[in-house]
Image (cartoon, rainbow, N blue to C red; front, side):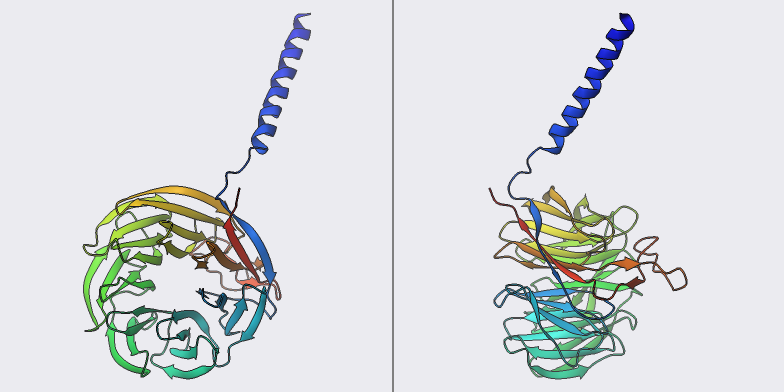
Length: 359
């Protein structure tokens, strides 16, 4: 009888645990959490990509696909509009709605300038031996192109399309950059865990600020109203670092996922979004005020969805990824992760759209 009682008690305990786990599985997700809304497969050969940009007025997503050039994706129709000519080596696209122009940064150190409405190519301008990304400073009216391999920043007049200044930067791995709204370009120095403050008018480095608590700063976004930069840091302990753009002081760090590349700031909802490709998640951080931040939510995505663009009107996040493999016979970039893909299956690239759930 004692054995029977013990068996019965054990059975009830197991059943109770199973019921609790089952109830946990069925717990409803509160409204407002980001969720996958659509998946659109892109045509083309072996996929490779870097940054994304979004034209909210025309609802167009610009996807920089390296050797395949810049692809323009209509997010309303869910299809590719065109592959932009003269954009071989496209790594990033900068959109400047005030000028109605887009600037594609090509790996050979050139930019392809196009009209945002018609998508007509205006000019391909060569300015360096390599190039990675770009930022527009509205105070000086200049575009700053970053050339990481050359350790150079080139300043270009976006109307006359002429080089107006160059400067050497003290970093062997320049990464994300953004304008602070006060005439400066802030540039991540990934190898030094620092941010460089560059005066866009005089083409000079004014300050070099250590990003305390951060290693390998990559993505960057800026809240110009509160004078805060949001810096995605990879490293062994990936974090989002919040920096005062006037003093260089880091006011807070918060955990994010591994493999960050994309950081976006939404000033309407006071939210910072980070896409983290190795951990395959989006981490959203709420801004309570200029110096206080908290984790709002984290949402799973797909492996290596690392860059993003954002539609502030729909609160829609766009990211891309593909089915990757690691071929040990070829060089492997072990910086982001031990088994970071060095090849992708043709025709496997997709556009993923996330938006908040409704009640």
